[in-house]
Image (cartoon, rainbow, N blue to C red):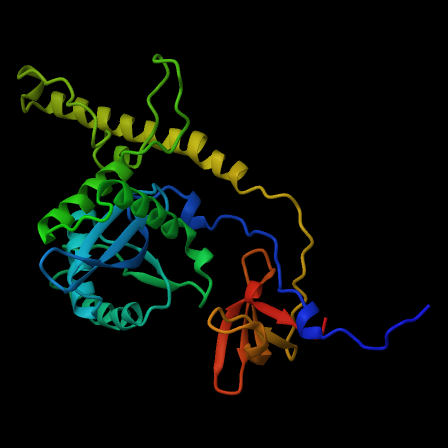
Amino acid sequence: MFRSNITENPLRTVRPGNQEIAPLPPDRVLESPPFSISGLDFAGPFFIKDSDKKHYLLLFTCATTRALHLELLPSMSTEQFLLAFRRFISRRGLCSTIYSDNAKTFKRAELELKKFWTCMIHPSVQDLFSTHGITWKYIVEKGAWWGGFWERHFRTIKTCLRKIIGRSSLSLNELETVFIEIEAMINSRPITYIYDDPSEPSPLTPAHFLIGKRLLSLPVTRVSREDLTGSRLSLLKRYRHQQNLLNQFWNRWRKHYLLSLRSMNICPPSKVTCQFKVDDVVLIHDDRFPRNLWSMGKIIETYTGRDGKIRSCLVKTKNNAIRRPVQLLYNLEV
């Protein structure tokens, strides 16, 4: 039988790296105030009626309660971002941790926020602000799925815009109103199971952690004047009632929402091909070029996750050193 001596091109047969799904980080599973752990990102551009000026949408989302906050900005500059961030913390409270991608706007804003925080921790204002600071964390470059808990909101927003606006053009005030209404609808969406039986409790929504009820629900029954008297006993009774409601929200969040995430993130076992080590020669995936024009590099450092598995690598190329997730690296020495 004739057998060809021509070997197959290794660049065509090599496969990208793969890794098991990591467990949810502690920031997603621990009880914390709304927007204490937040992720943010930009979307756009959006055009308004009778103007060629571009506008952008800044999204803040809570990693724990999945609440949403939207800001419409006239540009993606650092100055506009800082103004929007000041409006955000004035209405939603200070954050302890912020996740974002590696946009240059956010990297420059981090330096400005550090200077801003130095002024805030001055002894004259320590009585007003009793927090420790804002920890800014970046996801790895080109790893958009690392920020999936805010990327998923963009898909919902785009679906709402396509159904509400379509191809029509809106003014600035109209567009801002639409975004605020979309924010209210998303914050009123159920995050727990919806029962068919009316006697069962209503589904939990992110708005329950913000105002205690759904934003789009009917008004509650009016409280009598006797219940609004300022006696010490009535105030204590009302305070205990509010604390009991909040504890019920967190218990339902833990039992019905958090446990459902465990079943949703279980994937069938797959063949893990993540054999990367220092000094390996790899091919770097790049969506801008065809595969035969991708650049090559050498791994100079590996980064492991909380479970000890390699999640990303620092690769030395002919121009600079870049960090990429293992899913975008093709090991040529396997």
